[in-house]
Image 1: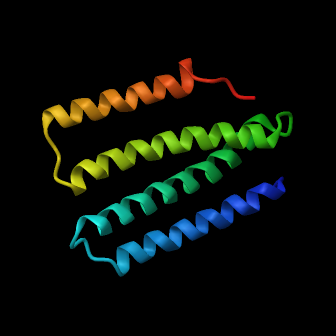
Image 2 (image 1 turned 90 degrees about the horizontal axis):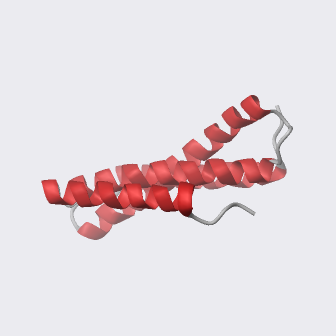
Image 3 (image 1 turned 60 degrees about the horizontal axis):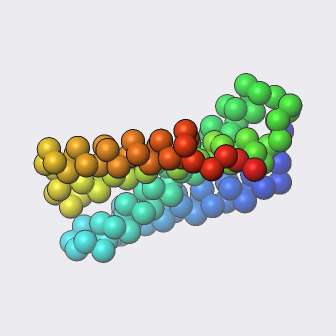
Length: 126
């Protein structure tokens, strides 16, 4: 299996985010808003690391070695961070008890506008 050197750093950071998620799940109790926010940040980092490393291996299988692995990892990282941010928004609304029709509509509109900016209109990759 082909593994570039930078992927070891990404896997190490993913393991660190897994440990921070386990700490926030097992040790911290959701007694105040700062602990909930720490949990949400560690959940975002965990899902970003999980989706980016798995997505990189799937994309490497699909595209082979014909593409630059750094560019491929950046594209997969951008997609995985976007998906993880969607999960973060959902749990943010649930964790702070902000579920209402207006908040859901505004969150979905913001999420779609961010996706449009990142993937369609935004700055092209180098």
